[in-house]
Image (cartoon, rainbow, N blue to C red; front, side):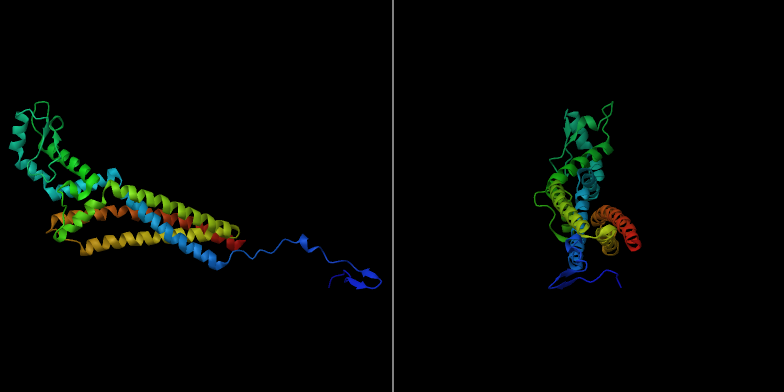
Length: 283
């Protein structure tokens, strides 16, 4: 029991010590509702996962990566090496006529020409390997700008080659610009949600929620990339269809981007959540 006398009010006056001024106490803060924090955590997981997927798409459709992928597919689709070797006499005839740009007859992208100065040696001899490489580079650059329309106006639209059309149309500059814009918006939204979770949390434990959300988002991205690779390897076309096989291989190679990005994000989230959880338990 306290030795402080209880305050008593009588007709004669007030006796004892008055109670302390309640305003001197800090207002009790119950904190943000756990339901609100859970909702923000789920939203951060979804938005961060969407951002990572679109960011990976922006990387896959960047100019250097996409043009290299387009060239790989076009090498098999157009059989450029065999075509150049077959049309070598026609190319030699164009050189003899003084042509500065060589056009390969029968190539599906007739607008693509090869500068003669880049494929001839000091003695004027034609380098067929250089012709094929330069031809594929030019076709890949046009495919990056216009997709399957670079080969023929109607694109590929029949049978199993429809999947080739889809890949060619995806690895383009227009898709890269869209992916960059969406990635910017999703990244901004993820930052806002993360900051809200930190501000509404308590002590050092406030970093646990954002860290867990980022870890889960990265893990889901990794699982998604592995699932795509598994489907391609298990259900993809066999070697009897070299065109579809090569494009499936190209897509499989591109899944390394979300796989790597997902691992990085998951590691970052774990590095944030684990120490904060340990320190919060000790506090």
